[in-house]
Length: 409
View 1 (cartoon, helix red, strand yellow):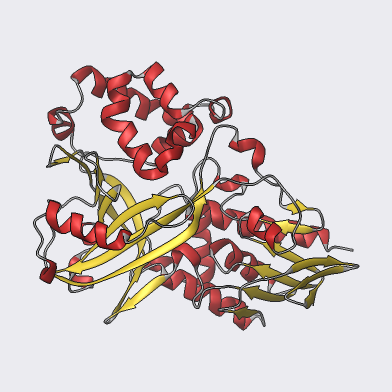
View 2 (cartoon, rainbow, N blue to C red; view 1 turned 45 degrees about the horizontal axis):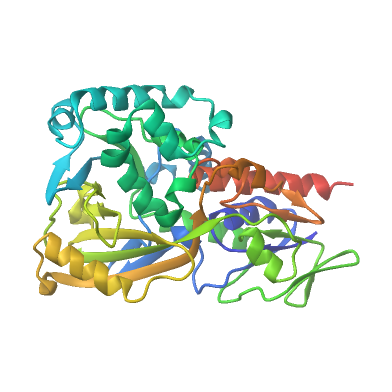
């Protein structure tokens, strides 16, 4: 079959890799580079992701893919430390003593929070889909835990949508991040950057005869007798990995819209670190970003020659004006950084960075096969109720299998 794939992000590339041996594959990607949210900058003599990334010890499908591509030896495991910025102070929250010293929560609050962490993996996500996260926390853990711990996280992640986010997302988020030791969380990273994964997928697709068309936005996807056309080019079937509402604008079927939000991630480099050795610093105090992610407090700075920091912000609709300037000015002021200390900075913006897991989201998830075409991506069942590289890779392989079955004699 001739198969057109809309979107050259992780799911699209994995599906193309899986299908290219037996089918004629063309991938359409609107950006000048593949990988989507897993793409990277090439700075000086190193690579760094446009959006911060790491993987978890439970990511079995990712590990299988790395082995299949021959790069599993490059996966290394590090400790990711976390903390909170509250009342103009950095509070590390890794060891039991650090948690006990955190002043924003009472001892009873901390005990309840510990109980939630221990029980999150056993929770029945299906019954939490219709329950707002804020109501769940306030009812089961108390108002102070919500306002002092969870509300800043939900606000930084979802903004005005925070009261609509389901408890299913929140509990899943806690469960996936519960692999912690006394010093922090065990996280994985590919030595040299995740661009090695993207490059390996691209090489695999092209070696099997597949084509990847960069800087080629899809303007029309029209069903015709016996197949589809993408930008006037004929295919037996198509796989769309973009949000369903975006495909509908191109001529695809009308399906329930998936609520999405955008991400703005400012990456900067400097010659010192300013977050007391903490990798992931959540902002409780108001700021134009929700977290300060110091990559070189996770991966050793000697691999880059300079300290790398992400400032992460989420938005709905269009990115706020001059957001990069406001983020940079706030960071310099808050962490006593002179502007001249920052050697470079770049802003990455994706208006469809990921779904917003509102109450009732589970009922919106589309099947892989939809009205004569196939769909998979961040909106798929494998990425519910928390998106991840693992979920996107699983979606790519599963939809490829559906396409094979549909095309069988």
